[in-house]
Length: 120
Figure 1 (cartoon, rainbow, N blue to C red):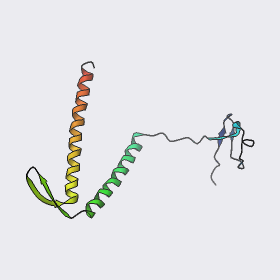
Figure 2: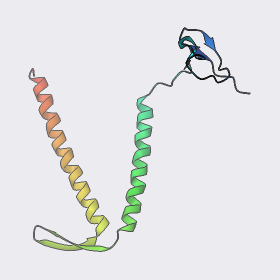
Figure 3: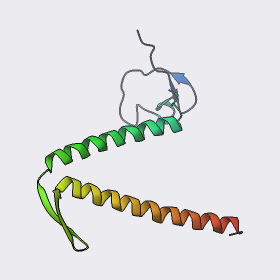
């Protein structure tokens, strides 16, 4: 049998939950319940695990998208034309945008580090 939850009232006394009472006349301020069940602290490993789970879900969605969009499309770029699957064209475009964002972010971080190194 599980142990009952212990609650601390607003005046500091420990208690277990009793019968449900409602209304302002039956629940004075000193009798309202606040839980004393300790919370687990958040860690980097936990945040990493959540990030990996979200990335895995995104990858599954991307794979489903690619399997559903296999029809060929004509792509023109700088005078060159090619027929490729729609999913591949969108994937290449997305990776290209990601690379550009990575380069711009790296340059900006370098600027900020040089500014800090030279006294702001």
